[in-house]
Length: 552
Image (cartoon, rainbow, N blue to C red; front, side):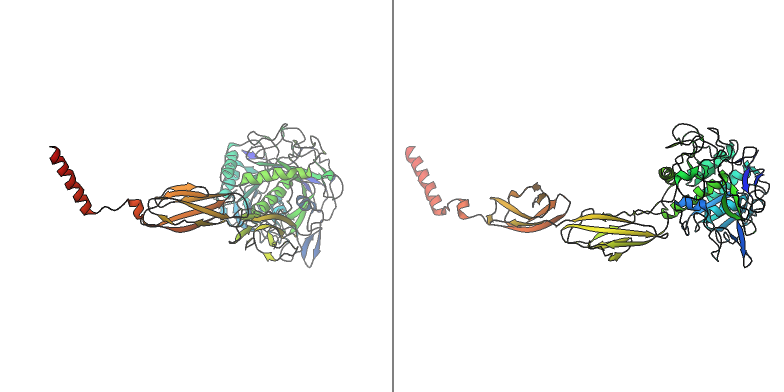
């Protein structure tokens, strides 16, 4: 079985829409042309010193994904890997030569390693939107995550035909190679081998992102594999006019496949996750050139690049976490224009256009309630950004001056409440602050009053507590191993020295222990009764015997 993909292409030489036959059906084919306005400028490139350069280095789709119309340079993705399962990638393109780290061709048997030639151009365009890095000369184009790695897995032939066997093998191989994200800018009818492969990928931690299809605008028109519940389905949005980055300038084009009506479900087929830019997308094409293409194929890599940024910034995030982030971020750019689009979740753009998140600063204190005679730790590791955080600055005195730096710092403070402010700055010059009121406890102290005592008598010991904050509990540990609580304790001590421990603990958990030695003397003579002379005892006995004799 073969899938077909038809792509809308805005040609860079001959202006117009070209239908490319073949790959898994995510193009419009016989569908009408997109109804949203498209910039059909006839020249997207120039030549400088023999190098083809793009008309813009940060295209509108990248700026829209960042939610920043003035974005000068995207960043991020370091350590994240995105597998582009497509028509191959031109890894000699100046903007991609440092990004492609793994290259395989699954359209031949046996699988050809270190080969991923792209004679079609579709896969190169997809890879560029994800991770193009501008080239060594910084004159090229930039993708969403220009520090991410690309696994170029060719599973579609030069005519754009994608067989189920090459596709499923490529998805499984990408998973086994450790890809964090797998992007499938293709679509068609449900196919068990492909469904099994995407299930394998998600079960093993990869996020699978797929184009919804170019066969809209009917409800429930999403193609597979995007329609599978374990796959992130991405529809296309485009500008209504100009290049303004704003939700009221976005519209869902008619060609973008729609999801099912009703609330989102990750348990049944056909729900649309999010929208992304897919109209007039400028990106690298083979031969060091650049081209503009339109289709949900172009929307999916914007989402894949965003996923790479999230994974890079939060390596512990699971694929489910990243998908949840998409859903959480989408409403910021809720698209309400286009058939089926409305406020809130809808089948046209899902939760909305997911964008790069502003950094957030978070402070944690360990222990939660420090004590004044011990250092405590301020931890900023809970701070988040889709770009690498390059600075953690601390104001530990409350005077507005950031006097310490580091993700974690140790600090000592006197008893009381102290404001501490954290400022984080990321590689894109985004910053955020958080202020935490740190309560520092005073450790409670205890002294014990021990009376003079003799062995065997009941003795009462008293504890005097010095404590500044909260209620306390006093616990006694007595010589026989028994315990008691309270400000006093009564006990009978044996002759000699005995050890008593008394621990005072406040309501915040701070404690101190005092050990005292209790000395009990010998009992006094009065305590033993009057002494009796042995002579008197014998005399009394003899008298008793004599008296008894006379009576007899």
